[in-house]
Length: 215
Image (spheres, rainbow, N blue to C red):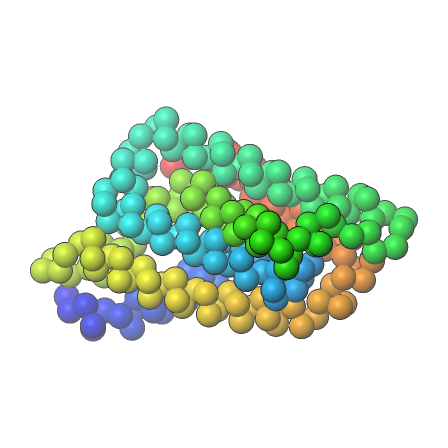
């Protein structure tokens, strides 16, 4: 298999994977709707930093160890599920606080354009990705299909992962920009409250699924 010849198939696969619903998509949509495009940028970059690390872990064999270790798999699953539940409950609390009032600001809104707010959003994205044990299993199965036998595994995987990150950053930021353009509508009191309630429910459901699903 030639590396250059496999790139088109790799790009198509990445686009299809990126469009699939999951914790990453839910997090990006909520951040873009509530905090606009600027608020979604660090979340997207955090998610992609986590993805790139998992790709390197897979190339180095560490992801295989995580996937094979029952203890490591369970620990990551519990941490990932717990964090998704935390984000979901946080969204529910925001919806509850806004009940019967005007547009109740989320405390995080004031931090969007600060270093602390940027780091918090980046960290949320990275943790959601890194604490997902399914990401380890996925990387182990996905990348070897596109790495020719005569190519160095680590370097080729790192290169392909950079391509995946670039594609996903463009796609997710484009999505965030589209959602962010409707930010005024999303931030209306009634819409914001319903959005928080719905996104909280989705994140809690994803957390419960992660907590209960097996390998």
